[in-house]
Length: 280
Length: 305
Image 1 (cartoon, chains in turn green, purple):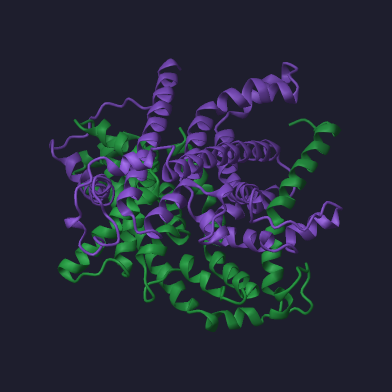
Image 2: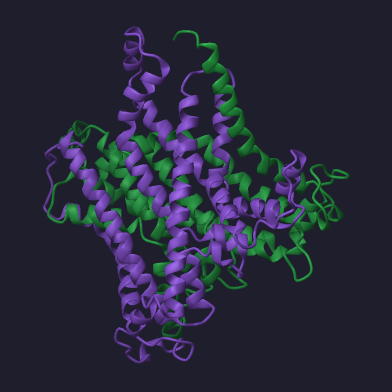
């Protein structure tokens, strides 16, 4: 590639610098505030802590039940991510490899449910879960299972959509060879198609995990004191009189770290998944 | 799109068996609640019938009449909220797309530190939505928060409360864009990577400048990605709940009353589930029209190419 002309170079540095500042400033505020003592966040905003302290990272665990919310979120997000893959893989394989009546209907249904607002399902699910609870004693409301099933609403359509695109890029000749060698449909899927589509699976896993980890609407209605997730639990740092902003930011950093690291490590798979599937 | 004809031998029931789990879950979490919502919208479902909602009296189309009576208080509020949401969505999508395209283009040419910059840009999208919104709430919250401090430092400070009144809309847009533009960046980057480098080399040899290469190669080849991206961004933004919910808690200023939050409040704060369900159904019809239109446009252009 040829050398870049000077004018373009200046434009590039200025553009990236501006975007970098916009992106980084809130992140810096988050980190610096987490290192402040409580008296620093009670009144006027200062950029730098008056003294650097890790106190917020200690007290945040006792101000609210952070550990429990963290565990609840981890269980919910991991379960819905794994379930999403388990359910989406066979469906995507069928859509990618077979021509059958109803295929287009299924594709269209998956595409359009992906686009519906959560609020649409919230009221009915709330009442249905409540009725199931009254009738059978199985409490889906205030129970993590209800939340896991609900989060499938969001991740399943996207997962199927993305995996169909991914499976389409795996040559069907490979399947045929395996079938001729006597592997059944499931054997072929597990031993031939899945290994070739690993990046797609990784992308679906991160996407589903992130969706569940960051969801607030359903969590606010479908959980109770014993099943609260982080999205709802973090609100408890604000009391009538004040907000423990240093602890809020310390907790935000802590709960963000696992997903941010995971995302950055795996984002190239997501990029490839997007090119292969969703965005063709 | 591949038009590979199926040659793998199998019984006719195999694809349906593979689909079965997905269909069961789709029916369970999508179809049943949707039918349930439709039923609720036709009944007088308020606080008296929540515990035993199946016995709520039939209301016919009353809920719909109230919801779309734009002269009445409820309908007028719904219409206003719809307008706010539409303006919000258009702004957020346009800004996110613009920033994403700028960043993706500027990062196309390799340079030292490129991976680092790219990683930084992706962080806001990787953050859980509520933590992203919490940081902005903190920065915007008080008259002397970080945003006012930064504005004051460059001589623009007015000590405004950003989360109140008309300013609340701006706060909402900035927060949503900050968190969403990296997704546009990611998708457009994926799109750019799929454009063969030889095209650019050939154009350069032919004497095309950077602007010409962008206009004649990048933009046309990005169009399929861009079309899906804009639709996805629009629907996510239009349906956004978490950002306003975290920024404003229960007291959402009128200027920033997005439709998801509005329906949520109409249902759960006033316990008028029937009316809320009717509002949801109206919203559903609107979104289905949007999706159908954009799918029709996409498939027509696909056939053309």
